[in-house]
Amino acid sequence: MRQSRTLIPTLREVPADAEAKSHQLLLRAGFIRQNTSGVYSYMPLANKVIQKIQGIVRQEMENINAVEMMMPALQQAETWQESGRWYTYGPELMRLKDRHGREFALGATHEEVMTSIVRDEVKSYKRLPLTLYQIQSKFRDEKRPRFGLLRGREFIMKDAYSFHASAESLDETYKDMYQAYTNVFTRCGLNFRPVIADSGAMGGKDTHEFMALADIGEDTIAYSDQSSYAANIEMAEIAETVEAQNAEMEELQEVHTPSVKTIEELAAFLSVSPSNCIKSILLKADGRFVLVLTRGDHEVNDIKVKNLLHAETIEFANPEEVAEITGTEPGFVGPVGLNTEIEIYADFAVKAMANAVAGANKTDHHYQNVNVSRDADHVTYADLRLIQEGDPSPDGKGTIHFAKGIEVGQVFKLGTRYSEAMDATYLDENGRAKPMLMGCYGIGISRTLSAIVEQHHDDKGLIWPLAVSPYDLHILALNMKNDAQVQLAEKLYEDFQAKGFDVLFDDRAERAGVKFADSDLIGLPIRITVGKRADEGVVEVKIRQNGESFEIACDELFGFIEEQVKSLSSHS
Ligand code: ATP
Ligand code: MG
Image (cartoon, rainbow, N blue to C red; front, side):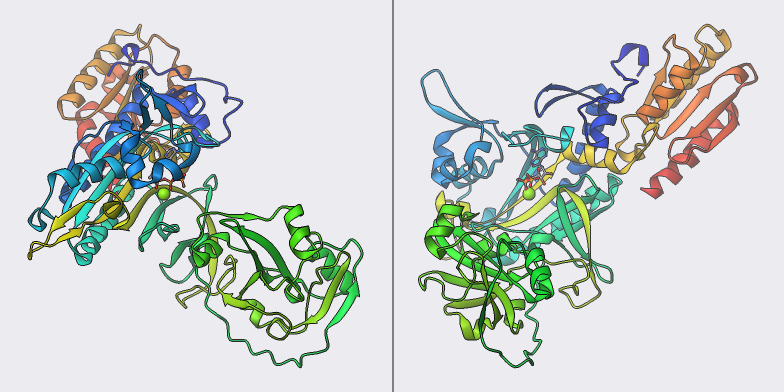
């Protein structure tokens, strides 16, 4: 492509409102333009990258016999009502009405549409397993669209759905998908980790998220420094520790703690360690109040509480509710002498605490020498806290560290969640109708583009891994008024295209400085500069990734570029 004929609107300034590096660079390099909050146009260069990523995804899907199709983005409300998600999906679902007042949604995901199609078209176990997918724009009215393509309100997703007659068959496809995703993200040049994820209250059992490691990531990953263990921080399980309470239980004692509310204040006021204070939090799980206890230096993991209680929603009780139930204000709540109708859930670590400090359910007062097993009723112990850095890895190997990640994909065993709700059954060998087992598998194509940029850039601009680069080669003719340069550049442009290279040719009548700056900003892997030595048939080749440059004679050029391509391909 001739640069004079395409549209690459590069900017010299860093756009003021873009926080994420990928957002800044994609705007500056002319890859994307915002239309409205969370809605972007993919300019010609981004469109090329999107197509390369999609090409990789299609190959890997084909390899595991997943078949591409296309479903409508416009979905009738009835299908979502059947699954129940019309009522539970919330304001993220973009809803609209047609001229007759009938309700619709713009596809946020396609479980409903796909399940209704397969329900109608597949009747026998003989047609299973079946895996279908599409690549399409999705719509979600995100509360906080941000970071450019990382969290958009319209974004491109690959979504696959699999249908099975047995759990073994679902397992097999799940494994295939897991491997295909590993291949996709490896080929895209991403540094990523598959992590154990939350399947939610509705969920099936297994699910993994594929996390591209990046500081801008909104998810925290807990990983072991000595094994492949990695989990979304919310999902990292913590085994019950069996530290014996060897201290003798002392007598419960009420102490005056005026205005001492936080664990830090409390520990300082009583000269005890935060790890010997009990944090007591009144939560509302689907409207029912429960008291959750953790050690003062630990944090409650609300996903674990939610899953334990099979609740759809968990929220903090507000101050009025706290007053009504405990007779005091947050800060002085505790397990001792609590209204007996309130169930208490304590983290395993609380069981091992002896003679601890806890709120007395009386303003400005705490208890000392609290031993929960002795002093409180209705206590259930469970794993309820967030894992911390330095904790032992749940798989018993190594120590936990944290990293930030961007969720670029997720694989999920749905089980019969949709097939039961929507009556998607098949007839087994004995002619009995059974609900199909299902899996669903998403890749954020546009988010992956941004994640690649987060990991591959420097202060001059983007650095594309070859496999997803908009073009393989950037040919620059430095002076368009110089015939020797123009002729040689034109010839190289033709020759490399004829050899199957995807080439961007900077044939603009711009100054050399502008061309170099734009070229670094756009970040194609290999640049061929036709400059002063054109009449001798010598060009400069520069590798964007490491900045190495070479003066090469044209008769050796093709072989040299092939070598560079080989070496760049083996690095990604
Ligand atoms: P998140 O937790 O980041 O909101 P999600 O878990 O709701 O994402 P899924 O329903 O699993 O997303 O969608 C499949 C994939 O689509 C995600 O793994 C992610 O890569 C991508 N994706 C989801 N929401 C967005 C968005 N708002 N903008 C861009 N990509 C998205
Ligand atoms: Mg997800």
